[in-house]
Length: 274
Image (cartoon, helix red, strand yellow):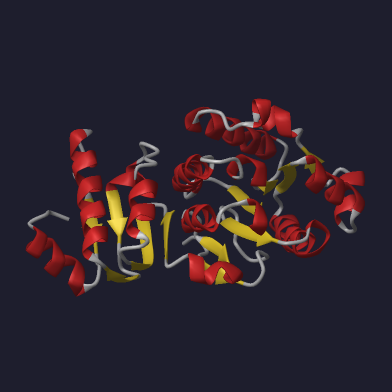
């Protein structure tokens, strides 16, 4: 079972954990979160990698104990342009392949997997960029459910619109507790299903619709686990219906497990199948 929930520190997320973190100060709350995240990776025997913008890289190279990890080779620094050519994400499948190949190299080197500290504010901060970042996070998370790849995705709070930060965070199983008010629900991958937890109201249903479209093509996409969904409004039910129809168009039947009583009552009233 993957770790999930709102947390005060990303230091206990497991081999395939995926956490969204916000920060105000690179040398302060970013550094503290990075240390907790990387120390867990050391305990789990994972290879450690950092990718991020120049200011974040400077902090990693100069702030202890991160600088010591770099100096002794424990923490490798991947050039941002090598991972994100031209400072932009590759198509989702290609970007995932790059990370999956890095994880495979870590295994070949005798590690239990790969742990990536990513400072990627620049990928979500330009006007109109955050929807693509949210879709990528959701796409990657579904594949991470069966991978020994862990990631801490860090964003400067003032660098990403609150709407964008909400959508991006909602695609992670583990979320910075300071983002609580922005994240009424989370959609994330488990080994056998997509899990939808929390509450979906009229304001967050468009975010849900957006994330559901980020299909990875894996069997995980064909099962929705709603056991930890506590409330859903009719626009959210409609979003689930649209997703089910999209699955059928690809030749698959969507299976829904659990869910609050209101889900099925609303589906009957709306005349939709979920």
